[in-house]
Image (cartoon, rainbow, N blue to C red; front, side, top):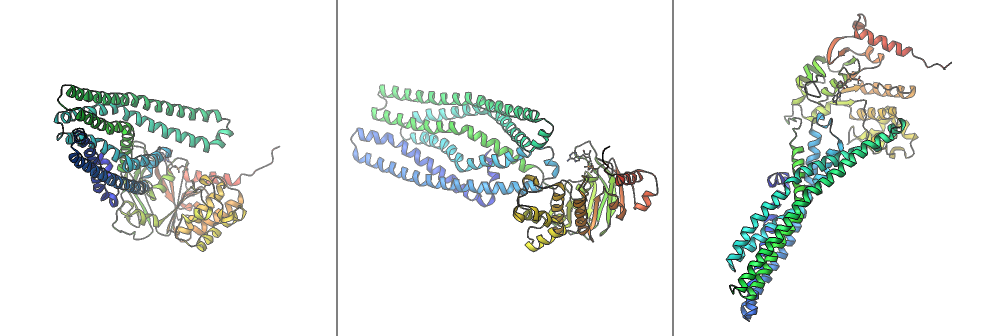
Length: 577
Ligand SMILES: Nc1ncnc2c1ncn2[C@@H]1O[C@H](COP(=O)(O)OP(=O)(O)OP(=O)(O)O)[C@@H](O)[C@H]1O
């Protein structure tokens, strides 16, 4: 645990650790000295050796002073370390998450990630800021007292040194069942979070289909599991904690009993016995405190494991070679890919999109069209073959260089719960207000802004909930226009837009793709007819390719596609009779 915990400390705060540890050691040793000198002090006082008593009192005062000073320093440095950990670990996790392959996020509840990034990090901060000091003091003060007692009464010192490992073994045994119960609690808490989130965001669907009760049932079940896991954790920790507390008290009683025997046998004076009992109480006290924080420490150990596990997930390789693509072409060479092992979604795909040209991808639903775009953007790495931009394998381009080349405009537009301006600025954070307004005008976002109550300052709601599908698409086009990357990856909207929205979206897209290399998952006939090359995809493989004129001249999937679109164009709404 200590090794993993230390590995999490940010480099700039590592230098604080030795000083912090030295302060804790001095704090513990000074406390131990202050307690141990109580015995000779009491003896000297009872024997009326006031000069000697004065010396022991001075030693005690010195120890108390050192304890106060080092106590302050270790609190201060612990706090600094904690704050540094919070900042450093959060930033490190943030960077790490942004470099993970998108596949890692698939099938993972965002709530479980949030539990680690927020909850576990908080536990680790608490460990460094506070627990580490209680733990070390809890170990070092009794040890220091036992060692110090060798100069006062070696028999009690030996008894304490025997008691220490016994208490450590009981504590370890007590914590055995805790780990698995804590893991269950963590998973159930993340699931309950996810269900609560789902239940609130899915209200429109649940209500529309009269399934509010259904939604409740899933949520209820998750909450029940969470309650059971919480009870499980209590059940797993209470017996151990009780046993540990009992063993501590038994050891205390035993030591007091032995001291009393020595006193009655005349082995030690009454004053020394009182002092030894007082020191024994001080010996037990930090260990009892240790028992109180042992649950929190085990929780922190589990948090450290989870954060380390997350940080150990392999990032997408991001070479910092500075290699630049030769041009804005795209090439797929024998690319194979599956989201899950054993399920191929793209098979042996090979094609070239020369710079400045448009390639349209057509095919039935689920045939793998969007996946080809995702591979071009390196949202995932190909399992076989290679994807090249400007002649360079995307795995050899830094993520920054690659992303500077691309503007993805996908169907699932993600809007942040911020203003429209901030949402457009995602395309190029350093853009001026004038640049943002200009792209907003081209993408007809200004029309939306005029209708909104707070204009540019209107917050778009969670995931853009306050905007229509067409409006969200316009913002996504404005983002891409602002980025102005030389390659556009476009997943054409399948959902029907009203004629006005459709017209402005088409106009915005036309501006966006001007002079760019474009790969478009096409659903409209007008898009494919204008493409320089059309790829027909079926079951993950490219089954046909050519221009519209070449492909429409022969029977096959492309001719079917054209036929379907022609029919769709002929659809008219008529009044019901
Ligand atoms: N994130 C994912 N995890 C697992 N499987 C996925 C994921 N995304 C897509 N798939 C699966 O991969 C296959 C290809 O999906 P893809 O979205 O590429 O098809 P598509 O041709 O673009 O479909 P559509 O035209 O309906 O959008 C489908 O079977 C789909 O269920």
